[in-house]
Image: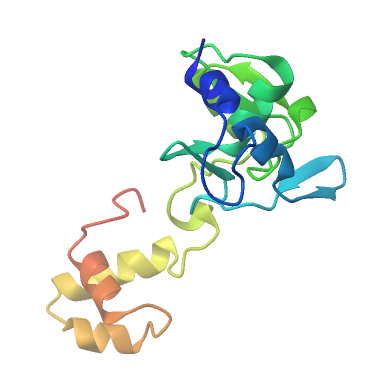
Length: 170
């Protein structure tokens, strides 16, 4: 029996949930229907995944929901979301899968941004800007003087670019 399955059967002995099992406590946690998704309204981790506290541990809410609906999870597998919503605990949106399948899903659905430099979409300097900064710095111009022409970035970023510490492909 896996750890989540064991935890869900434990009866809570103290506090406002005394007498309930952790499975009952989980099912009593507020949710919200958002389209076909079920949004976890309990606590969350910083990465937006739902968090369920039990037996001194914090469990991923979508994994708990999966176990309640389908049973134990293979220890070597992840639970993948078909809906791409980290907060969703709808078991119909979940399946077991490998880390590689999770990465492949993320790439295929454009959740991962392998772009670098200008192609990343948030770049504040173009490749031409970077070349000009490097050229001017190598010619002896001060970083402060160069920064005056690029107020959209910090002085520190001018220093990083001028000394070619990042964006070596640009």
